[in-house]
Amino acid sequence: RKEVEQDPGPFNVPEGATVAFNCTYSNSASQSFFWYRQDCRKEPKLLMSVYSSGNEDGRFTAQLNRASQYISLLIRDSKLSDSATYLCVVYRSGSARQLTFGSGTQLTVLP
Amino acid sequence: NAGVTQTPKFRVLKTGQSMTLLCAQDMNHEYMYWYRQDPGMGLRLIHYSVGEGTTAKGEVPDGYNVSRLKKQNFLLGLESAAPSQTSVYFCASSRDRNEKLFFGSGTQLSVL
Image 1 (cartoon, rainbow over the protein chains, first blue to last red):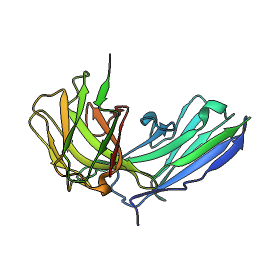
Image 2: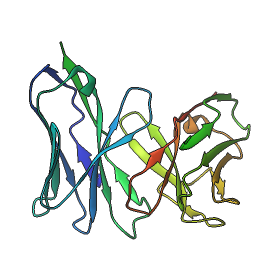
Image 3: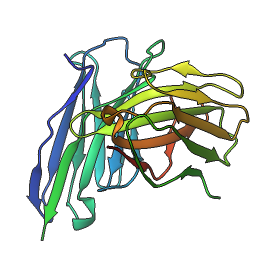
């Protein structure tokens, strides 16, 4: 089983839609959680960290459920510019991987 | 600020050739990383460094070597390239181990 798993998609949604991605992690000792965004053929960039109480940044909301070992990303009022691959990232101290990246979920927002 | 700069952006090698990828950061970060990204695999950590003069193995270190002689530079070497090393390579740096990663723009490497 992969340490971090994501639904690869693709998710194709119309502009203005709300879309949610889930990510599960296998190691309960995982400590920090992040969502990165990667545009086609570009480097990943941090979208937001995920805090235990959940957090919001504009149209983006991240949630963490430690009991079920998953994190989620909700995008409201999707824009064409939101089209990208969203990477779930988990940090666990003592891991040779340091930060473990999920394979990513591809989102396409359609006009 | 330039952030993280990787060179070269593209390279084609023949099997058995060697090459070095250079990563430079101007943010005074202690931590630097080399990842490879393959379709369906996500980013996998090759080697990393927690400070000048230190290196450590990541998840997929075989076939690669690294050096961090200066704090701002992290070099990734392929001594004898193999087709399985065809990939996109990303360098990254961070202030601390679980903080935001800043990535370079990537190197597309093809080994024929």
